[in-house]
Length: 379
Image (cartoon, rainbow, N blue to C red; front, top):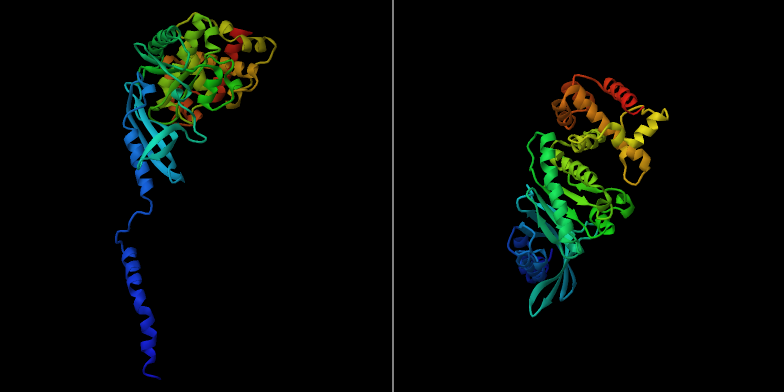
């Protein structure tokens, strides 16, 4: 073997040794220079900009306002888009930060990045203030946020009605809850639909709805959303019943889970709303009364599908009325404490277990008693 051959193999590698050594050091954890300092600057710009809520939110009792950037996309050398999660609380009302997915537009000027626009991220629901100026009205137990164009007089009336609803709910639901409520009053039915992410026709005949997460523990962002088209058309008692119903959903949220039958959730809310009124079953359940008089006695307690928004309005009316009368029957036969105990148990256990645990009965017995009461009170 020629003596010079090994030397010929080594010499071409010598210029590569610094590069190999650098690669080895990097792989072992040696620091490397950032690839894109602009992304770092964009994140810093968002952090600095988000320390103070925008001026258009003045008057809303915000705290903990912050944006957590999740991604940055460069559109050009001087333009970028950041995706972020907005976190905030309504001071005195929210028990934990509410969240909102946002998209921020940024521009670079004079070597500095600044935020030029803040909007809902694609697919995310808007906040009320995304729709225009917000008017704030404070009640004794309520915070009412009105959309652009809502009059202070209208908002004050809603605050007064919400203030009356809160103690009525506390009397029906003798469990710990916040004892206060946030009410949103959008500018129009279409704006309401935007906030809730569904077609406007879904809410056309409803006075109000409640948003919020279902699960163990209080929801940080329960909101009652008033339908600005349908709510003013209600009578004074109608408005009171609607708001008390929705505030009941806020109060019972911590005890409500995916296990809770919808007839129990909606029926309990109506029971709390009608509880201190003189409304008779025939007056409060006219649609179901007509069906019973025709001989169409329900074969079972209302199903989840019967309550669907945008479905058959007559079927939905019968479902709500039947659910109310079922809870009314339970409160009369097993006591109000029994109804509350059933609600709590049904959020933890399958319904047959909850009925046995709270009332000492079963579903067939309850259904027969309910059917009998419908015949007697509506037939």
